[in-house]
Structures are given as structure tokens and as C-alpha cells.
Length: 173
Image (cartoon, rainbow, N blue to C red; front, side, top):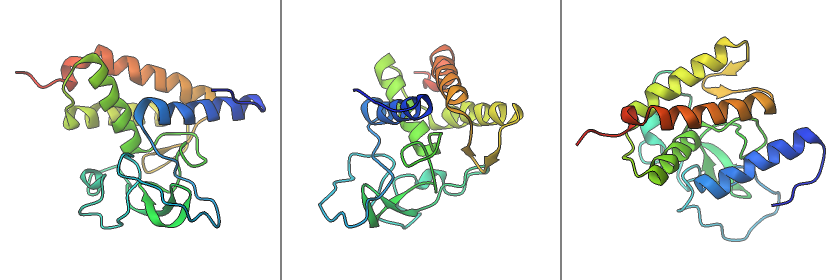
């Protein structure tokens, strides 16, 4: 991958592309006039329904501190494809939304040969959100806004925390 531009853009674009390559995330932005077919079945952060009872990220819908809903526009289409939060790094923000963070942790667990546990993920995710917010950054619900440098550092820290705390995420057999 080659990305050109100013330092902030390059870092943000690189993290965005890691979302595709590592966690299989789809683009959450739209391009006016785009009419080609876009298969969203393989992307955990895009869906073709806005029904919160069956959408891919329905398990976040009624959780405290999560404002995950269905926002229309994604997969290059302005209509007919929904994303879980208004903004994220897969659109034009500087953070991964909750379902994308879950996909990243699922991928880490898969690579490590460990079983994913959603409740343990939520516990770690909430601690990460609280830590980030306590460092003086603004947040809207669970949508974390931060500089690219802080985002990268927290992503690395979160990845390491998931590996270190793997016993919390792995179901005991």
C-alpha cells in the first residue's frame, strides 16, 4: 500500500486501510452517482437492512454507552446500505466504531487461536473508552474523537491488552 499526502492524511489513510486488510471492514462513505453492485455480506460494519433487531450489529443496540444504530450511506452508495455509527475511520473520522472494534478483536483472537467472548470484549472496550475519555478527549456516545497519534497509540495499546488479557476473552473449557 502506498499513500501520499500530508502526515495526518497518510496516517489516517493507513489506519483506514488496515481496517480493510486486517479486519475485513468495508468503506462507510458514499460516492454520489455510484450505482454498481456492492456485496456487503462479508463486511461486519455494513448491512442492507436498517432493522435494528436483525442488523449485523444488533447485539450493540440496547447496550449502555453504545450509540450504535443504522445510518444510511456506505459501501459507496448513498442509499440502501447502512453503517453502525454516524462517523468512523472507515468513513472520514479518526476512530473505529464499536462493531469495527469487535471485528478487530475477533481477528486478533482468531490469529491467536483463542475463542472470542463478547461479554469480555465489552468489559475491555468500556475500560478503553473510559481511559480515552479520561485523558481529556471529546466523545459522542462511544464515538471516540482523538488525534491520529493518540488513535494509533491506543489501537496498539488495545491490541496488546487483548493479547495480555487473553484469558478474559477466551472461554474456559
